[in-house]
Structures are given as structure tokens and as C-alpha cells.
Length: 131
DNA sequence: AAGTTGACTATTT
DNA sequence: AAAATAGCCAACT
Image 1: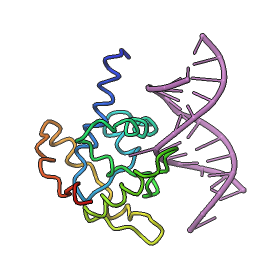
Image 2: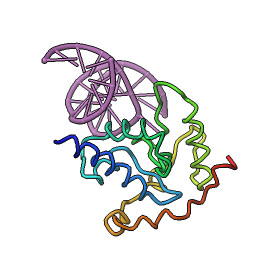
Image 3: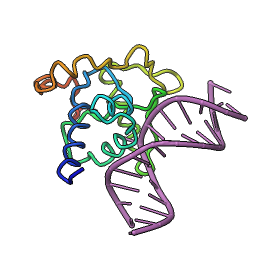
């Protein structure tokens, strides 16, 4: 894999995350598979870990396979932020801080249809300044 | 250049 | 149901 492809791989991950509809969530493994990187769930986590400078990636819609917000090694602040942002989108959490995957999990149906139409996320339902 | 690390997951206690 | 185990693989030291 050339260094150039490496960048493309990351872009593929970000592109897939961008396709997750508001109010839905996806798991790391699911994003990896849809991006053509089956078995690279950890790489998705790593990609999101360093997505701080990228503004238009709705990273809060990616959770682990248990439907929970994954723990970070440092800076726990973003964990709380993630939950707030998801709740602002209408995603409900159980008392244990988990999400009902059966209900909110994204099926990925829009992924293949609109791979080239970024207009899907034109209107984010959340106003970040209000959080 | 080899060893460590981690925003993962499936399996087993 | 929750915690430990064992695979996993690219990025980072």
C-alpha cells in the first residue's frame, strides 16, 4: 500500500462516517466493513481519534459493538460530549448509558446509493453552539 | 527495526 | 450481566 493509499483509506473512513444519518449510529466494525476495510475496526477508532481537526465528521455517531461510548485513554471530556450530541439528535440512552442497537443501528443502505452525494449532510440537526 | 499501543470485537469466565 | 482473554492490524516509538 502506497503512502498515498493510506490517506485514501482514512478518507474512506471519514466518508463513511459522514454518510451515517442523523439520529442513527454505527459500530466501528460496521464502518470498517462499509469502507472496504473489514476486520480493521481498531483502525476506525484510531482514525476518529485523530479526526479532531476535521470539522465535518460526525464522529459521535460511531460507538462500540455493545452500543456504548468507547473509553478513551486520555481526555475523557469528549465522551460526555458524544453522549450529549447524540441525545440532541434524538438517540436515547438506557439507564446504563447504552444505546439500543436494534433500534438505532444504521443499516448502511444509503452508503452505496449516495457515495458521491455529500449533500446528505447539508443540514445537521444539531446546533453545536447551543450545547 | 522490533516492540508497544489502542475511541475494537468475539469468546470465555 | 459484567469482567477478563485472546485475536486483531496499522500507527507510533
